[in-house]
Image (cartoon, rainbow, N blue to C red):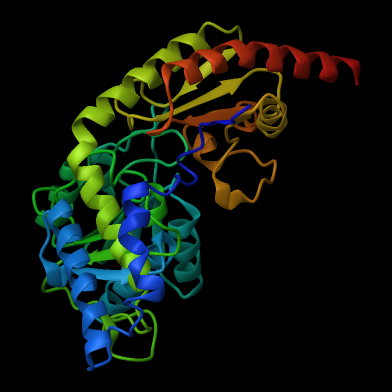
Length: 384
């Protein structure tokens, strides 16, 4: 039986269109894009075409797009470099939220050890940051605000345009980790007053190992890596041409199909939510409407999410108890704890993230399988 894959927030399958676009750059057009001869120039052209496609999808300029190895590198580059630049101006205060991805939280913790002050905004029970909380937290020495566009565990979408406008009015740099949002919701960096934005290819049916940092023109953001003069002397290292071409193709494909596909997936999500909430002891985490089309996160009384994942896997369903970066550790979700859930609720959570390959039949199968898995786990726990 083919598995029912509902963990697209962890990674997505590579699109056939993307694979086709990438293939020539492994064995035919394999030149280094920094080389001056014709083979290198033949690789440089498609790289710049991909940059243009990505810029168009974000409402950005070509020279504001910098290629990286993925979302983690982009987040680290944005946060560490921005903080250290602004520290030279006497600004050593940073603002983020308590439910960010570890790729944001860990750099913030590192900067705290260096003497920076970090304010962690609350996200409230519905998983939404309040603009007034950001306004109250800003200080004269605030250097950077980093708030994710959409949460990777519960799927809630933040009021990014309002948050960006507040930062712009106070002349504070604003970064958003948009790894989960890009490809699922329309994004315009200019209208949302975004200064820095991170994204990753493998979350939108593109390849792993490639991402982007958008840097608003005029920001003096030094590179994170030292080396050569690639990426306009801002990101050293030979560019991953197949990956970059694939990312450009993936973003273009997502832009073309976003409206219809988001509506289809959101309908499946709502069907899943209705079915799961009919199960005794199930609770939806995060705002019911203000969420990404494909993500639904639930807490189940009396079970461990990690055990439920294994039980569902035995029935051919691939879901998640938390982000893939947790390495499968059975820990209480910091996201749910930040939203005010108890440790038991945070440990008993399960995330379903639907994607292009999912159907109504998949959702109906999950709704049928899940109660049986929950009952079995509760029986096992009762017998211990």
